[in-house]
Length: 142
Image (cartoon, rainbow, N blue to C red; front, side, top):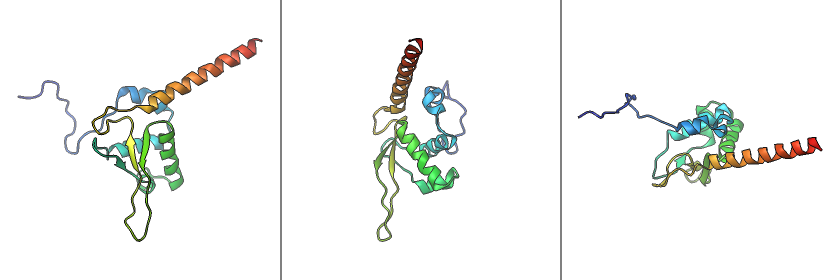
């Protein structure tokens, strides 16, 4: 029996979806194009049971951009609550090097629902901006 509401996604390699709420949010819209691309590239590696291994060199090659821009993208996503560093990178010529591991905060992790820190951070920023605007209006009227 066929599924009643099955969508005709391309099933060759799977599909990646994001919530409309995330994509229409000010937090997401305010990201640079490179950071948005990095989010999608990291989501390609996402699994519910483990963090995402993704480094600056890989981002630099796939976005494509310089290493400074790739580093800024990771910082931008972390600062805005989209990712969290789980484990730092290890670079060694004697032992195997390892890239940083990340938790994608808009995706479930280890059976828990998404933390969506990006939404909380954005709400706090908006509250601060509104408070500052009211303060400026008050000063202007005096």
